[in-house]
Length: 333
Ligand code: TYM
View 1 (cartoon, rainbow, N blue to C red):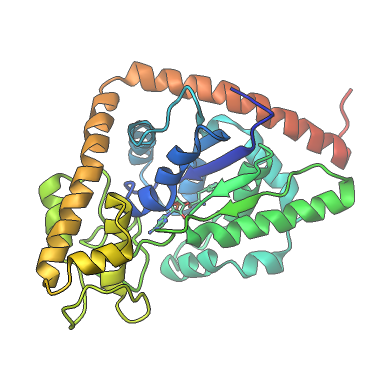
View 2: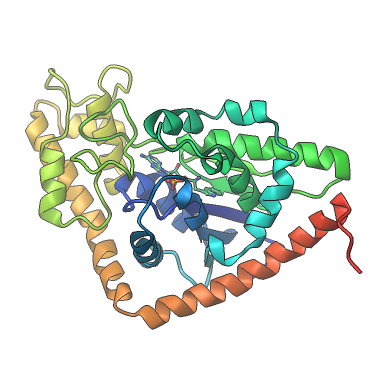
């Protein structure tokens, strides 16, 4: 599986909350399209999930569910290394080293930290603050060339580049400097009931469509989606955030361009458009939901994928960690 001729990709999703249409469109769908051309590692970022208070039993359950959903979305465990972050202690070990090459001022600038600490004022822990360094370690351990993520993670990938460049500046070419890889379409899917904010996993409302939602739930969420006071289906993300978001979702699910969508729905009301979007999402997610359910019933298979993933990822990660330990001068007999 390790093929040095191909460029390497690493990405991951936290098993916090259920996977949403946002994580599918912004991340997983692109991962699937990259799996033949690149040497890919896709991670379940469970260590990132504990920076906010969580239920351990739920985290365990969601980790397995998320793996089933990765595979159901089309990520082939024979082509990609699918692994659980906490199975590779090298992530935490490299993060410690990288902490010593990351400036507090850089972490202070992280938008996500500012947002999350404003939201969880009772639990602004050091892990939440240090999270981007762990993410840098996730990426640098594997010499990733590209990191496919949605728009909200771009700042973290840029910090990772800065940390890597600083380290390389001192010790020579140790790390590859990774590039963020942001999809042209759907890099930021917005909440259906608040089109000014991102569709998020933590949101337990009408605004987030979950990968595992049943068709009637999905359709109802789209029927209630917030639009505007006009009646015209037109792509204008500045002034028509709700409608434009629905158009992006529809475009991703059907392959139609914005222009085609505008033409098809010209003179028709929002009701008809929202129904069409809901139906398209139902048909996109139906095979994923069914396959994920089937896979979840086969725990032995999922566990075999996890074991193989840990072996393959661990081999790459420890090679890099020992290189780093040597560079910084940790003594080995
Ligand atoms: P996370 O778990 O919040 O999100 C996972 C991926 O989904 C994308 N995404 C979206 N894209 C478009 N619209 C949305 N509404 C939307 N919501 C989520 C995110 O941009 C992301 O790509 N720190 C990361 C996980 C991580 C990681 C890594 C990623 C840990 N280590 C190393 C890449 C490389 C995170 O919290 O993503």
